Length: 296
Image 1: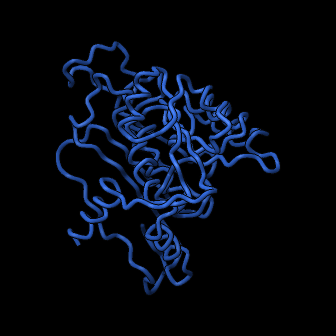
Image 2: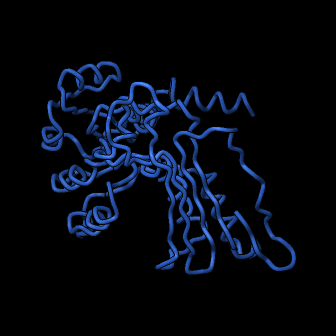
Image 3: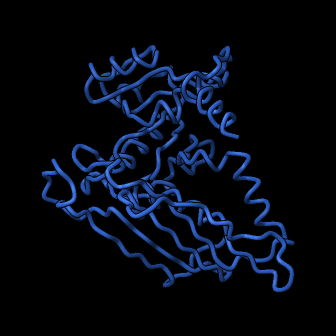
């Protein structure tokens, strides 16, 4: 099992087997020279014949050029808009700070580019609603607009959902999902995840994963009035070198809601967890005899 895991990491992210590219491969441009792009798109694209990472743009052209050289990207643009104006680009991957997602996703759609949008899709609910209901995204033959949660396409996740939806498994009574980062691994100094003005925080960073999963597991819509949340805000005294005055950003968030089918859903996200290491409890039994109730 360990060897298999290490092998997948090596061939998936470190040295993917090269693939001969198709003539009609989708040509991606990167909006932002980000740290996540190599894992999310650049490395996986190397082993997929239908995808080419063809261009990158950053606010600083020298930074974009250095990034392109490091990752063997042939085209460098000095601005995000210049990349959108490039007729050789079919789709864009947007991995800018959260606060910039809405603006550049709309600009990309207007330019006729398909959009792979790093999570969270926007900085708030109003922007998300406006973006995904915008005529640029909903018109016939509109470009594809997709939030970048890769796990939903993984066979393991699809198998998991199939098991949950199997009638013999019983109804879901409760579901819990969490994501944690040990304290100190993500220091606030210089990290945009701790910037309130850039829509950072535990919920917007790590919390998107468990919340996204919870929306799928019960397969139920939240009941109005059942949602709640509690946060622990950033404590500047815990971190050296953190000089920003703001403390409005959350380092921990827990939230809950009740689904329209009766399931209770709970989630946690913590960018500074202490006091132990998280583990996965075996709390769901398929096909429970008797009342037919399942917990995830």
